[in-house]
Image (cartoon, rainbow, N blue to C red; front, side, top):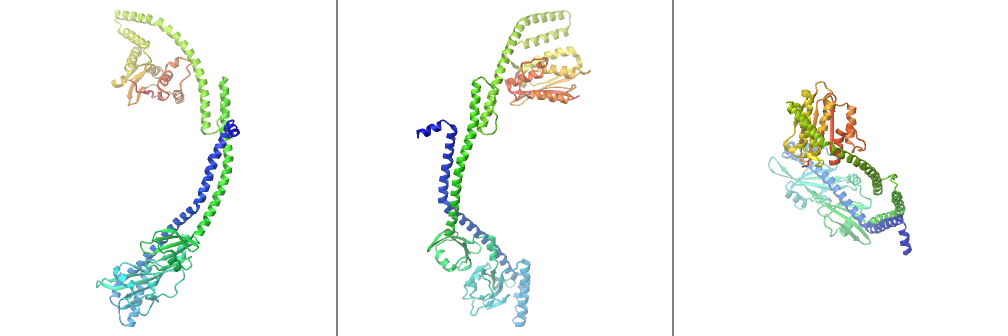
Length: 597
């Protein structure tokens, strides 16, 4: 046992193989054993369900056929037939003509219903005897309606159909030339005289369903399954595939309730018996399937399952080896790459060939190595930018007081000279300079940013006069939200410089703000010359990309790219600047950022 443990500890692949074999083979063996034990029950249960379904389908077919045949009995209520029934001649010659007329009416009605076959004879009789017989039906001697139970049942049914089996048929009629294997029964119904509102007697239709073989072939019952149909009086009216059906009925069916199914032992043989009772006819449909046949099928199924189990065990061992190797090989690559990382080699990536968890781990490892490389470069870049910021801070400590004093002197001189334009420009420039030099963090309110923009507009209006107009629509509620400092003035300056300044007549700049519970949008729109489509696509592509490389600064960086980069740094890559433009119509620059206060 210790050697086995040591053999496993030295290889992850061996552990995986053993785990796969145990996890796969043990359930397969148990499953095969359980299926072997349950196979007989499964086959029996499926056969039982199949037989029940077949019996239901047979019942539906026969019920539909009985309903179709039963419609023939309504021919006695035709107006012409009622007139004939109220004028039955007693003269034999006239009666023969009357019988012919009745047969013509009957055949015409059968043709109208589209029924062809199955009716052996139609007889109309009352207590005095038969007064209409459509076919060669032979009435037995000594027949009496008083002794015929079925006749009284039909009278008491008061117009509803009553089904008669072969035994009841034999009490009064003989149908010659009946085919073997056919289903023989009769339908009896009380008939009314509509003109006199009394009874005409009982109409009896003898039925021979000689196409039962066609019905059985449609149902596709197994040859090992026998079938019998029993009427209400427990008499067999049809049987197929059962030797001595009367004997089987008395020995096997005794004690079974309608709608049940069970295994019945009869001598050395067992049968699966299914019983279905028709709610329409009251007949019982019974199937008998040999239990020996079921066990034979179960043994075949069990042998097949065991064969599959053995094959599955072999395949489990082979697949476990392949899968264990496919899992361990990428892990070995990861291990080697980690050793390279330990040696400060960050330039090796592992090739990904799949989509499973190990492949995802490899992708994450590659991304981690790539991110480490980026962080190393970012640290170098940050150190350089920090040094530049120190230099700019030293310069800003030298210049502000000198510029404040100089602008104050210019303003005083302009006031002494009554030059309000120069004074207004100097004051606006001083306020802009103070706002830009504030050291209170990177954020301000939109109100402060708008005031800074208004100072810039004051200077530009002194420069351009009426050539450039400004329209601002920003609500008081929106002005209370926070925004990054020094973002609106560069965008307005960009609109003047590239959109309106090149036009002889100038134009108008609209500043409009809107917000919802989560997002603020500030639109700066001009009616300048617009941007060419190719150049617009290039600008949009740069704005949608991730942060620009901060190692290179130019005059263009203080414009839209600089503002866009700051927004993405502060709020995330989904925020920033979005530009739409149409050549000759103007440009709209939209600032999108989250609501903050």
